[in-house]
Each structure stands twice: as C-alpha cells, then as structure tokens.
Image (tube, rainbow, N blue to C red):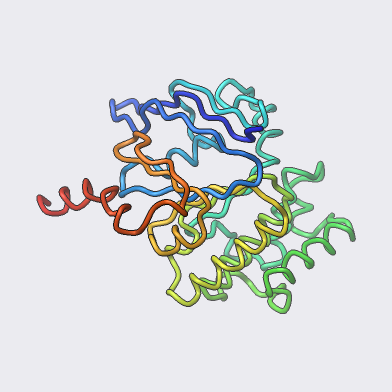
Length: 256
C-alpha cells in the first residue's frame, strides 16, 4: 500500500513560473527515495508541497489517504504530525539549548504548546524522551549548550534528534549534508539512515552528491524543469547515467 500518493501535481507561481508540471509518484511505507535534479528543477518545491509549506496549484497529495491539497488548516496540522523534516540549514533556534530545540519536536504532539517546548511546563516523560533522542545522535553531553556554539555536524545531529522527538512515519530531508564538510556529511548520512532503517521510516531525501544517492537510495527519482524524468531502482543505474539530469544546469552556466 502506498503511504504517499502524488497525482498530477502542478505548482505555478503568480508570476507565471511553473515549478512543478503534472508530477505523479507513489511511495510505499518504508521505502527510501533520493530526489535528484539540477538547481531550479523543482526538488525543494516538491518537498514543500508534500508537507503543506507550499500550496499546490492543482493535483492531489495523499498522505495515508488524506489529501494535503484540499485539507483544512486543522486537518493539515494532523497530517503534519506524521512528517518529520530535516533541513539543509538546520532551522534551529540559535539562542536556545540543544535540549530545548529537541523539545520543539513535541510541539505538534503536545497540547501544552510553545512553553512546554521551552522546558517550562514539559513533563518528566517529555524531558526524558528529549534526552533519549539526543543520546541516540550522540549529543547528550551537549544538551545544555546553545546551538549557535555547536559545529555544523553537531547542529544537524540536534535537528535529527528534534525530528526523532516527533515520532514521524515519514522523513523529508532537503539536502541534509549540503552545508557540511565531507567527513561530517558522511557521519550525518550514516546516522540518519541508521535511524530510518531501525525505525522502518519512509524517507524522501534531496541530494546533490551522486555517490551518496547511489549508496543510500533504494530508489532514485529525478526532476528536470519541474517534470519527473527519472524513477528507477538505484541498483539498476550508475553515476554516469545520472549526469544527464544536470545537463540543463550546465547549459545555463555556460551562457551565464
């Protein structure tokens, strides 16, 4: 059964730019997908539509048979509880501790809201869970440190712990290692995929590193100028075959 079902998704902006063109895709529960494509191909817009941060112009996005496109604000909040997001730029609150940032992952699940996430009214169970999430990403010893004092790799680990705090069924990762050096990037990718596999999560991850895409992805999906042009098993494709996805970007650069 498909956990995510995208049908004829189109996103057009008021200025007439079309970011996504009639994209259809189905993702089974537990599947690991890497999303590829040149800059401007529509990858990030696609993920933002999946979580309801961008409103689709037309089409359907079914998450566990619930349509994000036609959902009310309240319904969308319920759907989002199933979706954890890991961003390229971490999206942490810099002047708060790692521990407090992880508690923010409980915002959608708890009726206590913002103040609970600042540890002012968080229950002992919530605090214990937050520490367990930090421990899982080897960041428990940095729980009281402000996140703006941490390295890039450490900050992304805190972001992953925050995602874990949410108990999602689906993980959407938008270039999670693009801001990291190669060593830290490898460590974060290993950690993220270990967690995804041990919890049986469904993942859709944007990557530009083709070596990583082939190593970690079970299935590779490619976009070109907003259209889906690749959908194949990673076992049946090689790096050379993926280069054509980026030819459009090279042409633009040559004429820039």
